[in-house]
Structures are given as C-alpha cells and as structure tokens.
Amino acid sequence: MIPLRDSEAVRRVTLANTVLIAANVAIFALELHAPADLSARLGGLAMVPRQIARLHPLPRELPVLATLLTSQFLHAGWEHIAGNMLYLFIFGPAVEQRMGPVRYLAFYLTAGIIAGLAMVAMGPLSPIPVIGASGAIAGVLGAYLVLYPGGRILTIWPFFGFIRVIEVPAILYLLLWFGVQLYSGIASGAAGPLVGGVAWWAHVGGFLFGVALAPLLARRTVKRSALQRRKSLLRRG
Image (cartoon, rainbow, N blue to C red; front, side, top):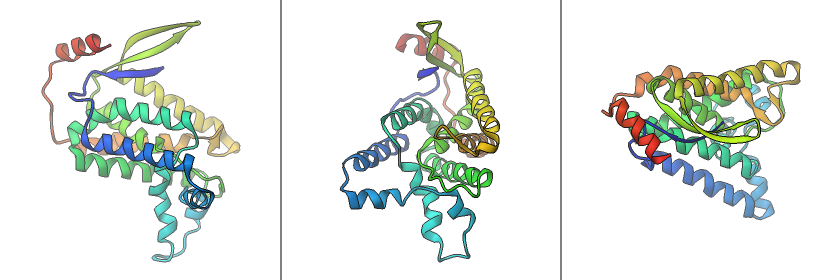
C-alpha cells in the first residue's frame, strides 16, 4: 500500500521535516554527480556493523561511530530515496507538530542511530554497509502510531490487478507495516540481517524506539475534531 495523505497534519510543510527531506535529496544528488574521489569518500560514510561491533575505546573510534549518523543520509538509488522520502513527507509533519521542530529533529536522528545499533546487535559480524533513512523514518512511524491512533491514511491499494484509493485506519496501516518488517527480519534467519538489500531489523528497532519515546517528547497538542480530520482527508484525496 502506498500512502498518499494522512488526516492529522495541520500543515504538510513543516520546518524540520522539510530540512530533512531537502538534506537527503541534496546528498543523493551529490552521490549521483560526484567525481570518483568524492564518491569514495561518501561510501566511507556508510555504517558497517562489523566495524561498530569491534570498536575500541574512545576517542579514537569517533569517526566510525559517526557513521551511525552519516549513513542515514545516503541512499542506494532512485527507488530507495523516493520510497523513504514519501513516507517521511506523509508521516513526518504530524509528528513534528506534536514535538516541535527541535525535539523532532533530535528524535529523528536518534531513532536512526538506534536503528543502526539494532542492525549491529542482530548482525555484529556483517561486513555489508548499511545506508538509508528508513530506520529513522521507522521511528517516525512508531511515533505516529502512539500519537495518532485514531488517524486515517489515504492510500493506493493494488487489488487483483486494479488500483483503488482507499482510506485506512492509521493503526491498522502501521501495525501491518511493522508486522511485515518483523516477520521479514525473523524469516531472514541464518541468512543474516540483510536480505534482499533491506535492513529489516533497523526498521524494527527504529519503530519500537518511536513507540517508546514519542509520548515523552510530544507535549504539544493540536486541537482538531475527528470529523474535521476526516472531511479534510477526503476532500484533499
């Protein structure tokens, strides 16, 4: 299912979320057009679980630890970044409006770090570089689940060869999403934490972090009736 719009965001364009999307797109453009020497340096910003797991005492290993942050802004291709940025664009604004831009930015980056550490925990010997914003975005999805359990998601649903646009309860959409990530992570088994190029355990770790931490950070409320949200979603859809 491809999300198109949520019912809870008062504004679609918010400060921190827009900055994050712009930063991801700008760095991806740099990846595409950078000369060979710069491309090699960018590749060195990816997080490698084995390197993190074998860290020696600080501060000598600070550059390696920094890859838990820098890897969040690298992407492997158009499909990778397009999917990530779509989810961030749909779910990020509503979470930011409850946290405020500063808390939201700190939450997002921390969720990405926790997601990376989840990958290290599940595959400490893995030499495969891990990149992408999906772990941090999984944290945003987890936050959305607990902050807006009554929300609705307008989504594209392929059904037996037909494409339908339907409205789905956010709690159902996000629990199904999490279930797929968890099942895929468990099913990877001896094949390791990366199957098909997807960091399943980063998604699981980021999502659970979002569920746990969001209630502690969300101190702002946006008053809007359920009827208003529903009418707005259907009108815009």
